Image 1 (cartoon, rainbow over the protein chains, first blue to last red):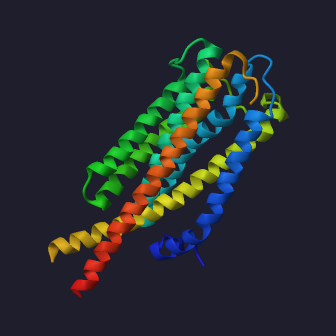
Image 2: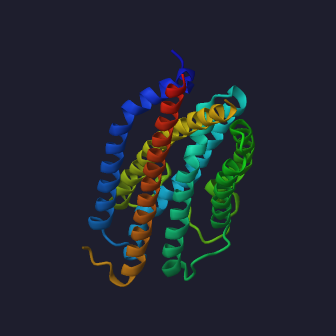
Length: 242
Length: 51
């Protein structure tokens, strides 16, 4: 038994079909519970007032924005090294999900930043690298659409993904690289002195887990679609050649 | 509904934008999946008919 067996599209479709309903239900329950808990049953912060409630969407979305790109880097490496089609299609399927999470991070960050910093946007290292990551998502999706040959598209997008990985790392750790900018450090870390209070942390963890489950469910669902779309494209090409 | 004070517009618009984008992502994924599945079934039916 090897993990590479699931790179077989048939096995992947069979397993993902069985897992998907349970994963989707768990994701929906976790996100709804986390957001209701955070929005309705947590107090205001003594400095930030009710804007602290934005943390329950901004932080999970930002984590998934960079996390999705890291997943795409791994899937792209698997494609480049082992040539498993499912991994290339999984990276392709993940990109729009990561794009939306990154956009949510940017929008909620701007809405949160305006009352707290007095500005919708600052050219802060973390914000700037996150914006560049958003542009990389657009370029990655555009490149998949622009190249007709699926294997060539997978090769080119994989290389782009590796290059964009640099900005994903910078976006995640910019706050450590440069001791400047408005953006605060990690809201949750192993260093207890930096963590948010438990009353905010518990619903926040619930939302983070919920968003991760939403990502996993959407990834499986969209990868199944990409596998079918690839088969459809192959059938149409055979029809044209016949 | 909790009292959001003077930041009600900011908090509600952040939640509204997030929920809207997530719904669009889910609906877009479902719409594409259905379209691809329908086209694939038609292509496979044509292939069966030819063979």
